[in-house]
Image (cartoon, rainbow, N blue to C red; front, side):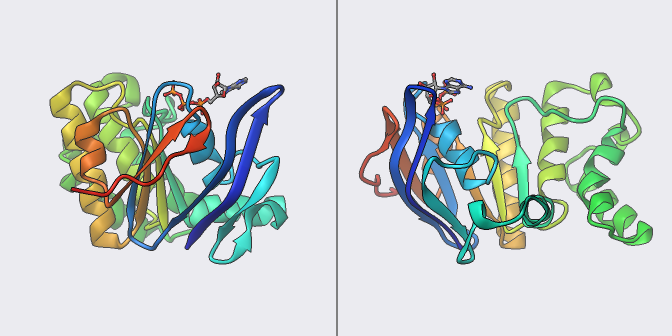
Length: 222
Ligand SMILES: Nc1ncnc2c1ncn2[C@@H]1O[C@H](COP(=O)(O)OP(=O)(O)OP(=O)(O)O)[C@@H](O)[C@H]1O
């Protein structure tokens, strides 16, 4: 489904990613690991079409992201991709419910279906009583659970997650990963996740390790 071929990305003179090739199959959970500065976020952003590789290609269902028009690429990000970042990055002016509904709003899903899907998901995430609050009025763990809900509510083909537990304690981090992996499995969404946590990496189907911008041989899953 997602296919990176010899992807290279530089920030000025710094080669952040060199000749990285990898595939992500539908429904697969792939962890990107490696030391700080090894290129994990750069690779994730190239795979998601948020950065345009200087060399190489990223194909989504056979189509080169770089050859799509801006409109096609934003449509893809809107409908087929979901994103979770280290800090929930919810819209501060919107309530938790409105934040979670945002991808459905933007995709033009009708109001009744939108309300039903959001309510079900918030219930599942234990956020029903926080639904009317703004992000500043909930805990970090609750905000991050809402961010997971927002990343997955539109049933994307792939969820890209950049250190989604990096700002949380162990218990909240585990809850967020349980939800992210559990919901993705149910929906058949693939997950590409950057993490420093070996316990989380172990739960992925595949682990890709980066060093100095290069992918090492794949680590077999236990
Ligand atoms: N905006 C930027 N401008 C210049 N250099 C950058 C920028 N972003 C990243 N880099 C450099 O690119 C390289 C890869 O960075 P990247 O953020 O992809 O690493 P990472 O493995 O995700 O690191 P971390 O685990 O610390 O988040 C590093 O050398 C970094 O300093």
